[in-house]
Length: 195
Image (cartoon, rainbow, N blue to C red; front, top):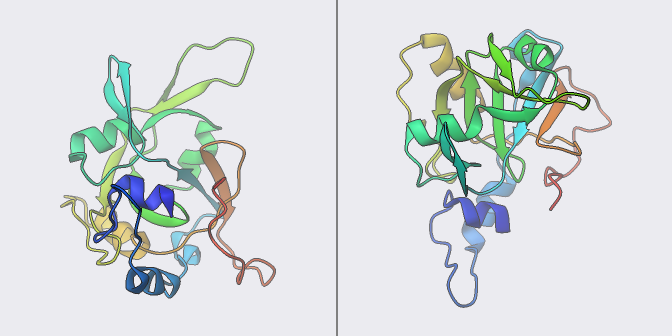
């Protein structure tokens, strides 16, 4: 819940003094459907497990992480890299859902090109240079795409994913999730992002 509160994506949260997360909102989020990944047409999809926005001093971005108060350009820059990942594997999924506490809050597409950070000898970090922000939420309780994607396929993908639950487990920010349903994980809780 702290991650959701810190991103500003849940209205009615009081974060000064004693923190309050409205019960009605919590009950609503508990009933949110799981993302239907079977419609994506790929055997797996990468998931960017984001944290709240943090200020950085980098030449190509001011922020990393997801925050409802960031504008579209800031969000795209903060979410499109530099992540330790297998970039070809990320691109193969065709879409990169961005989750906070197991809820899809943004969707990136256009993952066909990437660049490495030049790290030698260890797993490098990659940035997706043509990534597009297909959609994002400013209010998780009323999941409406706050972006206006020009590409109809981007709009479709954002519509399918935004506001849904998407469980993922990883030691880093990028996780890989199979798109075929399994009976073993269907009913597991979604708050698996290292909370």
